[in-house]
Image 1 (cartoon, rainbow, N blue to C red):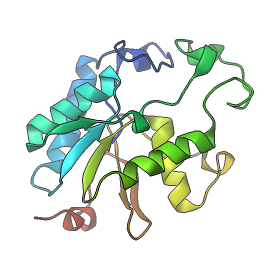
Image 2 (image 1 turned 90 degrees about the horizontal axis):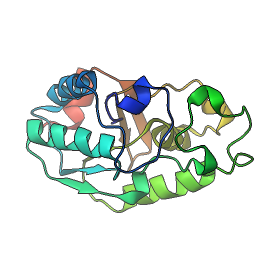
Image 3 (image 1 turned 30 degrees about the vertical axis):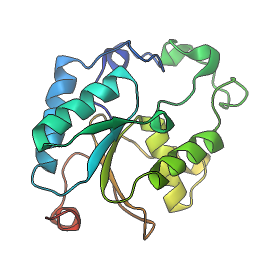
Amino acid sequence: MRHGESFANVSSIISEDMNLYPLTERGVEQILFSAEQLRGLKFDGIVCSPLLRTRQTAKTVGEVIGLKVTESNKIRESGLGPYNGYKVDDVPKLNREDLGMETWNSQLERMRSALMDYDGSYIFVSHALPIRVLVSSFLGLDERESYGIDIKLASMTVIDVEHEKVYSIGTLLLTDRIRKLFSS
């Protein structure tokens, strides 16, 4: 799951700051809507990035569906290097490595590693690019091939890690087919 709308999103700022940019009122409403989609489904826990917007998202979801939240630095926001805190439009149109940002492969390694840390069905609350990186790896896509994947705010992406199958990408509504995967 991606976090809900934060003040960074509203301001078009990219940020990996831990305690800046909380959820907006709209972001909380988005998360409550997504959390309702998860009510009644069976999960073993919630794991979230340590950034404020993801902690708030995970806490809200946890309260709605009755699960404890654990933090993992492995699913944190993409490393932004010297561009942390910049407006999106002010970042040069170069590849991440040339900009001194965390590489695609680094994100992939840590996201895949995070999945291996947990046995069972978990909700991972992270950020758009790390989720896109992870989904792309299950689909066999590289960074350029994945540009069209849109991970919307408060959306849910469902992956069966054991069978390496992607069931949804950036959805706001879970289908009956997905619900059956997590039925009690």
